[in-house]
Image (cartoon, rainbow, N blue to C red):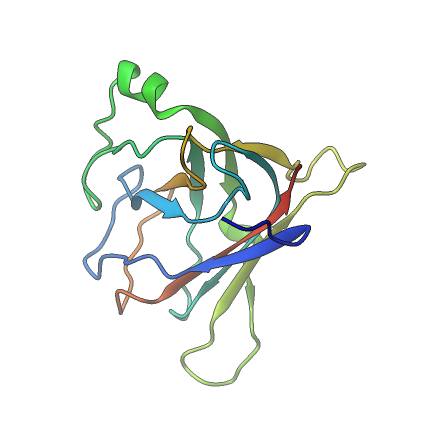
Length: 171
């Protein structure tokens, strides 16, 4: 695999359920972020996350967990069932809180106004997301994330959520 430039923005449209999710259920289960690191088994820095939700009035609030290994947390739309041992095996790298109060509307007057959410690493702001390292498993350039909502979700379409990961590749 060739080396990428200094970084990458990897945009995914993970399939979401169109049935209602409840608070603390599995929202997105072990979604692959391909090429999250530039070399097999390598390390990169997550410097930001941007999410766009096409559903008017829906600002997905919850926790996003990053892990080295593809480990299921349970079935999407159902209770989290990961065990302590499985959580250790997942290789948890970190988590971020996606606060529904921080989503911004696109100010469209249409009834389908999208919401946008961005987390950026700011070095001197103690109340803001801090960048952290992502580590791929040996032989892989992917890492994984899982998302657990803190409020009920109810998407209109399976493709209504887009997530971009801002990644700085490290040597």
